[in-house]
Length: 276
Image (cartoon, rainbow, N blue to C red; front, side, top):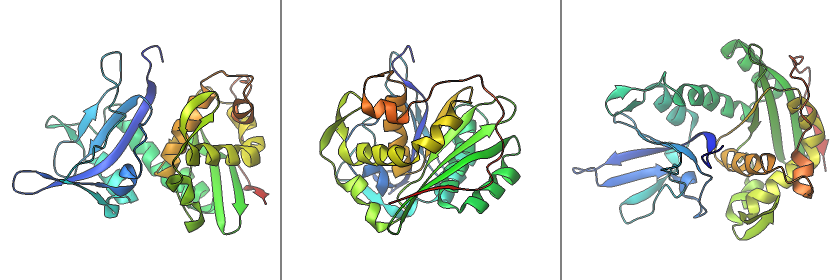
């Protein structure tokens, strides 16, 4: 955007403990590496306490360096699950006032639910979206399979606006941990200093599934990227490249789409498969 920020919201969970609120337990996945995030608004989701929201604009950057590390800040994998995120988004307060129905939290709550559908089978995801998101439908489901690792990409579309969301899955097999743990820098889509694990994961997914996904995205009015855990990191890399306009770069060519007149797309009848 003109203010140098990506629209949207990055969130992570945190519990504050101790007699003086001196102990911070943070979703361990949010502290997995030291790379800064994109410039976008962020919220630290608390349970039973005010959550902490930081916007992103010309004056503040959404804290891409959060969460911080320190002697009283601890990794906690038990804060990584669907109930932790969706439950806190449904009951959040900011400065003592309910914030659940305010933007960007209202949309984030909807998309947080959607992010976990990437872990479902095609049939279960389609049924859940039909039942829980009545103005939305699953229009593309594509799956790349390599050994025991199954990596899906979903595209859902809202009938009333013709807007879409592309959904990246988080880590769903032990073989995929290297996408997060391989952390030296590389170039991607014309950018330098990109986390190589995330760059390679996006590159691999789009080389196998872009042929299914891009035609669907071309028929959307606007596109939002959604993901949990690793999926959220892949969204940051994907969105940066998709918005770069770097038309001569091979990474951009692999994931970009030629925008068409937005149309309401048919509901997906099956998952499109790509295998090695």
